[in-house]
Length: 313
Image (cartoon, rainbow, N blue to C red; front, side, top):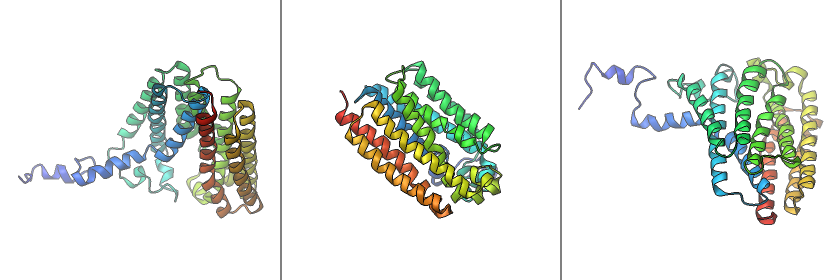
C-alpha cells in the first residue's frame, strides 16, 4: 500500500530518515569504513603475532580469539573517534576528502562518537578476560591515538606522529602480555620496531602529500622543515627500524626464517629510503610510504612463520 501524504515526507526529506533497502548496505559499508579496516587489520595482526612469539609457537585458541576481538573493537572504535574529530581537516585534504563523514555517507553522525567510545570500552573490558596487563595496553593504545595524538598533538606540533607511534607499540605489548605479562626484552624490542617505523611511514606520506597538510594547517614535519630535512629524518627512522628488527632476532633467538625475512625486507626498505634521501620528491616519498606497510607485514609474517614451524611447541 502506498504511503499516505502525511508520512511520505518522513521517508524522503531528512538524512536521518529511514533508509530504502538499497541504501542500507551502502550506509553500513560507509559506517564500517570509519573504523579504518586496513590500518586496524595491521595493528591487530602485529598484536596476534606478538602473542604467538610469546608462546614460542601456537598459543591457546581462546587467547587468540579474545585478543583479536578486543583488539578489533578497541582499535576500530579509536579509528572512528579519530575520523569524527578530524572531519573538518579531512574535508580540506585531497587524500581524505572522500571519507564517509566528509561526504555525508554516514547520517546521524552524532552517533559516531557514541559508537566509538562503546567499541573502545568493549575492547578494554574484553581484554581484561585475558589479564589486566593486556587490558591496560589496549586502553593505552586507544587513549594515545585518540587523546594524545588526535586531540592534543596533531594540530600543534611536528612531534605528533613520534609520540602517536606509541599507540602501535602498545598493541604489540598487549599481544605479548596475553601469554606472558612479564614482558622481557623481546617484546620491548618488537614495540620499539613499530615505534621507529611509524614516523618513517607517516613522514614519507607527508612529503608526498605536503600540500594537503599545509592546506589543513597540520604541522607535519615536511610542512615545518621542508621535504629535504623531513626525508633525512624519515630515512634515519628507517635505519633505526631495520637495525631494531635485526637486534630483535638476535635477542629473541629466532631462526633463519625470521632473519631472512628481516634482512630482505630491510634491504628493500633501506634502498627506497636512500633514493628518497637523494631526491626528496613526492614520488620518492610515496614509494617509501607504499612499501612501509608491506615491510612491517613481511617482518611480522617472518616472526609468525618462524614461531609456527621452528618455535618450541
